[in-house]
Amino acid sequence: GILACCLTLLNIYLVSRIEESPSHSRIRGMESHTSNCYDKHDCVQQLEEAKQATKMLGYTKNARNTGNAVPAEKSSKKNHRSPNLLFIMADQLRYDALSATGNSILYTPNIDSIAKDGVNFELCYSQCPVCGPARTCLMTGRTTEHTNIGSNGNIFNANHTHIPCYDKILSSQGYATEYYGKWHAPIEQALGYNNWITPAGTEWWKYGPGMEREYKYYLADNMPPVHLPGNKNSKGMQIQTLDKRPYKTNTLDSRHGLPEGVKKNVIQCDQHGVSTIPRTHTLTAFQAKQCLEALDRLGQKNEPFSLHLSFHSPHAPMTPSEPFASMYDPSDMQPPTSISDPMENSPYRQANGRLEDTQYADPQKIKYMISNYYALVKEIDEWVGEILDLIDDLNLTDNTMLIFTSDHGEMLGSHGMREKNNFYEESVRVPLLIRFPGRIKPGTVVDDKPVSHIDLFATIFDYLGLKKYASDGESLRKFIDGSGKDEETFAVSEWTPNAIGVPNLMIRSKRWKFMCPCLANSTVMNALYDLENDPNELNNLLGKNSKKKRYRGYVAQGEVMKNELVLWLKKVGSPYLNEVKMRKVLL
Image (cartoon, rainbow, N blue to C red):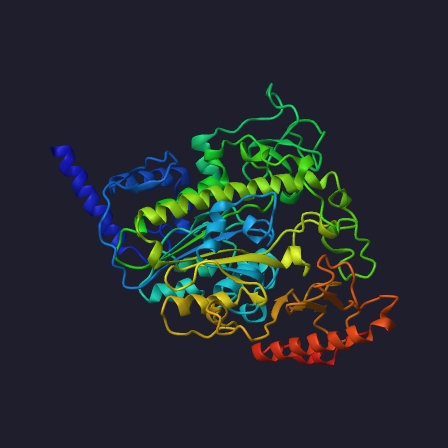
């Protein structure tokens, strides 16, 4: 009896401390921690304290045996004052890597169901095809020129952008806002959430560990590290640099054939093979379980919530776990049509290390990368299914706006390249699926309207019934309900003006794509592609084309596209408006 009384008093004390704690960074129910805490204490001990506090607050393991913490008793209260928002984002998921978007090998029924029950935008474009800038544009509804985030390195600069993200505004409107998974946006934006954010690309930040370090602590409790060499089962294995666990390399891996556990500096995108981590403890599983825990908890409160899950996958390292790794035989994979493109008339001939990393132009080796990539996407789809089931179980489906997209795509050997960082379709075009029962007609397909990620900011506030906030995009409602069916649309994507030797701007209509640098006198070639007749972008109708005199009509089309780009630059107040206006289409 005395012990039970003490536990009750401790429970009340913890709840009161949580309610009184500052609103900026919390560690899953614990009061805020600052950099001083991490200087004085062992972070592992703090994480264990957080786990204990969670148990005291009435959370238990759920029946799925996935490690999710869920409330021991369910609430019957369902009347939210406003709709909820669930935003699921993959990293580096190209537009055609779902069965809903036409992939005939990769079957993704759970993600597909979002399109089936809502809308599929087939021509959605990343505002900037690289992680940090893309995510910042999406979350703020602003261009890179307005956010001041033109590269991944900018996100770690304090106070680099003062533009609020949609979640910060929702928080001020009474929403509980939580974010799990890969945070790759300005650091100061992370302080507006009700939970502890773990930024990618850094081991530590002001309030604790980054994404990799947090996952490292999780793995320490579930899969102790294995040292290579010296292990009898380590043949053909190396240590993966993100999770620090062994994986069996394949022929595309930069350490393939080298001694086991060799010490060599490698980057994430050079790691290919099969992980030894069980499917229940992969990074994708870990991030999905965080989301499930939060969803179960938030879904039983009376206040509306905005919950964001950002998967790291299918971003490299491309080392899927079993059984996913064996689902797609490399021999069955089809190399991209453009893999052998000589790119003599392309502004990207030397981009992404293309001339040095020739293995990604090898039709046989690239099959391993495609196989691994599909496996990572398949794993995401299974966890999306778990999330959709829980939404249904909590009776939240009809009152929750659900968005699924990716920050940018992945070349997967197209034009002999890997990664992103360019305006080719495989890099800049992404899936965009939105479900909102009763507001969006099931099975809606928008296949003739290029749209941008910066349109999501306005779309979210529109569908949540909140007032309109300033942004550089527009609500997509008119294309969803059909009232804008007669409008011609253009999507624009940006690349940092500091980039040398590549285009900085792209504009896409239903049929045409135009690329150019942002300076009038730049020596970078312009590019125009007829996507109706050249979907693989093999024939630049401008640039150094030896037949360009025959293509005067295409030059005129280039002028049309450039003029539309000028109008867009004027609309958003770009400092490069006059430069682009003065630039010649045919040099």
